[in-house]
Amino acid sequence: MRRVAIGAAALSCALFPARGWAQAPAEAKPSEASPPAPPAQPVDPSKPQPAAAPTGWLLPHWDKGFVLASPAEGSNLPFRLVLNHVSQFKYTNSMATNSTYMDHFGTVHDVLRRNDIQLTRDVFYFSGYAFDPRLDFNILLFTSSATLVATAAGYVGFVFNKGFALRAGYFSLPSVRSLTGTYPFFHGVDRSMATNYFRPGFTQGVWAQGEPIPGFNYIAMIGNALNTLDIKSSSLDENRFASAVSLWYDRNDFGKPWNDYEHHQSVALRIGTAFTFAREDRLSDLDVSTPENNATYLSDGLLLFATGSLAPNVTISKADFYLWAVDAGLKYRGLAINAELYLRWLNNFVHDGPLPMSSLFDWGFDFSAGYFLWRGGELFVRSSLINGLFATGVEGSVGFTFYPFHTRQVWLNLEVIGIRDCPYFSGYYSYSVGQTGVVIPAQFLVRF
Image (cartoon, rainbow, N blue to C red):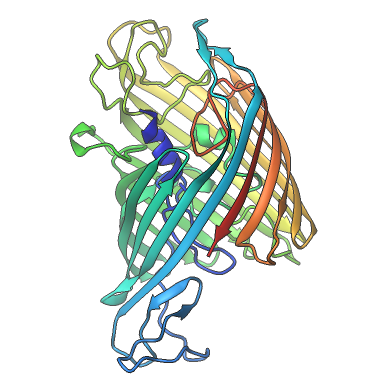
């Protein structure tokens, strides 16, 4: 069941609406998720307000989304409802890649090649607060023509203060920078090959987040597993939860996006790190060769929990997963540089036969740089690498992003990617296991 990994790799575009016009609805599919936006604030009396209806409600209006219901100044109605939306139309052409590849056992597999146009993500976000401005919520409706997935998710939470909010629901384990609310503001058409390979997905859980000191941010989460979208509760491992914590410092309003559309006149910096641990279970009986847990790949594209991944006819039923990520970014006058290093350990295997090794270590990185030739046009380059025991996957690309409506929220972009030995697959992305060759993705994305 790849649809689990695919669903996770997609709900990463959807879980949470944006906090501002310069950062529209955050991605919210439990696969490309963003951290929840803080609850909408009460009406600011210093700003012009829409006309109030006789009942004490403001009339529907625009304020970082379509405000469908909001109390007028002085009203004691503690409710607010805002609608946001994102549509991602994507073209993928991977016909110039190889048709087969060989794993580390010498077995030949077919490579999925594509030439299609998809409404890859179409997401509706309903957010606001109820009964108290501190009691916030998010309701997500996510669909994709690329995977024929339709999902409902969301969260509820309580904001004690700027330094501490506690929430429960579906969320992405904050294990890499692109799972902390930055989607889809990357260099490139989507997340990189290495980021997708190393990162976990979405799960049900409880998390805390805040900014206790100006510029210092954190998200800490405990969830059921690395990825539990569409996994029933009876299949979950009852012994241990997955956990992750992400810390980062933002200097001079670096913000969530990778590029410098805002054209910072002073240097902006972001420095962060994240650590993730999970005791993972294959979530399927040993007589099933393909596991329900398909979130963890090996460097030659085999799934860790698939029968025969490390030794013929041997199945791993449990494993410890550790991931440490370190990231940094810089912005200055239209120039933006981002980098992230990934270190992953897999060990403490439970298996039904002899294995040639007791642990695995992979490392990799993601790097991108972009420069705005003019306010509405950015040229970018990016690269990522995955180095493991069985193969080394690498990609490099050059592309261009065009903002036709003088806003960060609408763009078209195109890139040409050279790939060798891709170890990851997802229908939401341009990647397929075993790819070597040239891939051309393009997209038109609208967020409001």
